[in-house]
Length: 193
Figure 1 (cartoon, rainbow, N blue to C red):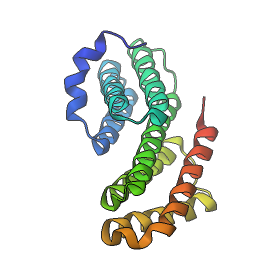
Figure 2 (tube, one colour; figure 1 turned 180 degrees about the vertical axis):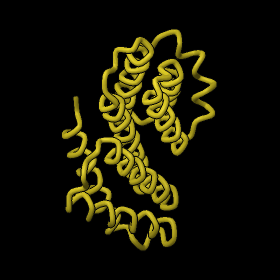
Figure 3 (cartoon, rainbow, N blue to C red; figure 1 turned 45 degrees about the vertical axis):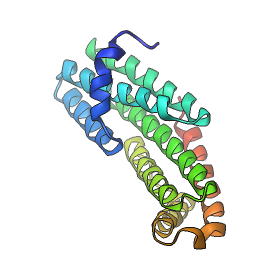
Figure 4 (cartoon, helix red, strand yellow; figure 1 turned 180 degrees about the horizontal axis):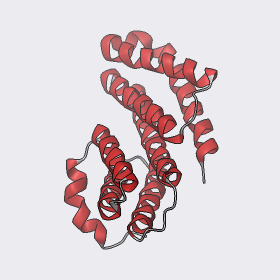
């Protein structure tokens, strides 16, 4: 489902950043609500292009979820443009899954950086994973459960420590990285199609 339209969106995807993708998603939803379906479709296609770009950079473990998200967004863009989407819930759920795929990818990157003793990079990737999990939860309209809240708090603290102190937090890092990975997987199961 990698259509020829991808090429025209590649330049757009290169301009997007991980935080920028959230703005693109917000614009798409607002355009959908304003019944500007063509513009909403274009923004969703930008999101699909961004996800495809991430596939090219991702580890083997993350590629599948990112590719599936890109395909889902492409399909959604076409359906929105044709007026086939009757509820913003479908859009919100697709955006939640996209952020979760990005969170999982960042978690893998954090774990790899940590194992290579690149603690600053691990902290940055972990912080990015946390942000994507929070955005995913927000789009899914879900309340954060106590276990997830605790894990997110520990994960945010670890991200800050890794960026500041590096190797001195290595044992704690391993456990927290495993915990956030488990939390991401648990949430992924809850919002799967």
